[in-house]
Image 1 (spheres, rainbow, N blue to C red):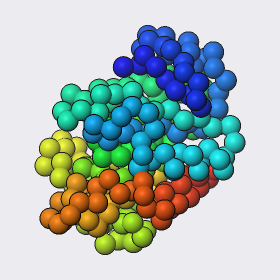
Image 2: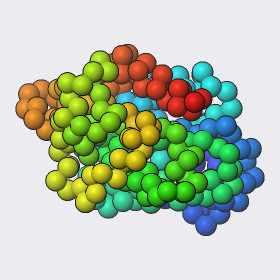
Image 3: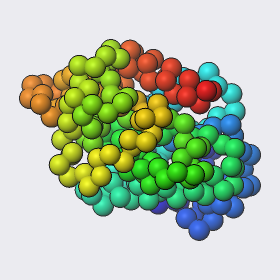
Image 4: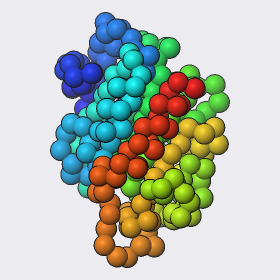
Length: 229
């Protein structure tokens, strides 16, 4: 899983056991944006997140982008592989670069990956919790009703109370509550997205986040503000 990291466009080969050495050898950045793609989306930048990443990198100097290396298949094992990858990456990178900040971005299954991965660092005093400045999710199957940070495509609250389709399968839907209470979470759910808004039964807008300039701009502003705050 940790075989290849793409850091600001440069491929860095590393096994899971040598990630610390790679991170230590690399120049530490002010921040890293990690993004996790949705189910069956091809490896590389996620369409529904890439403009957010690009805008962040263009507006804040000395940053890097890393795509989460996981299968993105329709299985629990795939999600757990992504969770393990992100947690190990953050632990190793925080040890090598303790001043580095992180933004976690996830679409669809990638949102589930980021929610569970971040939840593993929610304990008081965990240095990785302090280093994670923002968790952005779109089309989140784990969309928790009425959690702080829930917004629709206009930044409003029309979908704030919507339950995601995977809520019944989530053993710990409150795992991001500490992040949310501290203002670190934005969880965008389009009104016509049945994955994060299970009450919607019409046509699906699940793959439309990347084409919404409002969502992309709103998310980028949020990410930049948290990384600089």
